[in-house]
Length: 288
Ligand code: AMP
Image 1 (cartoon, protein in one colour):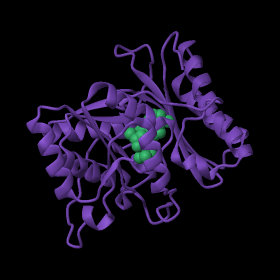
Image 2: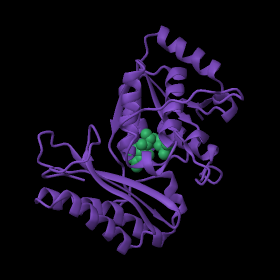
Image 3: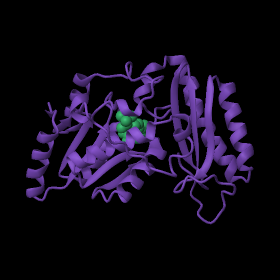
Image 4: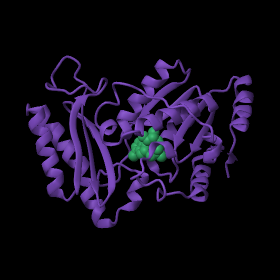
């Protein structure tokens, strides 16, 4: 079983000894309920670093009052067994009071990139993410930290945060891992029954089809409308957004053949109160 560390002092002491030995340290930050998406991040980390820390912390600051903080899947024992199979030696699983003391009073806001998509539909979410990620990076001081492109907007926000605050960790983005139907793996998928999983797979299929329509010259705004409508017909209860944006700046894209050619199509939709997000690149000969 991996060693479990619960305090900031202990994780600092450990990483200090690693740094003295000039070992390269990787961090994979998770909220637990580990699946193959997390595993792929861990694989990237273990292939590039001498030591890998996997943090397991369900961050209350990124949940709004109407979200699923209480019911979010938690199973530390299963996660530790999974980490053992993945060959990870250190799990950093601090309790909430270790991360947010009673007098905790700081909140990090990253501007611009958070002013669209999940930044609008989940007020406070990115501030909660930025605050906890800054803390985890300060506590673990990794050379590299690995984040999934599944949460693409979050990945860009974290890159911006690290740049702006001069945090000396390299942020590495890792590709999205999907199930056999294309559904992006997520801890929240455990909320879905078999029939809902079939509907959920329409999110990826629709974004993929939208991307190929764009490559064939369809109008961006028309494609967004078409995709949102297609998701409703497929059985989603609510479509929060379907947005075609630049993959670096998140500015709305009007012309996918524009100079940067880094357009992505993003979608967020709910199915029986389970919120799912996904994104695909818009590119000629794209392999999904
Ligand atoms: P979470 O536990 O959901 O906070 O996710 C922890 C990290 O795993 C984040 O960087 C996510 O983007 C990443 N992740 C979650 N699901 C996937 C997936 N299906 N493919 C790749 N990365 C993922």
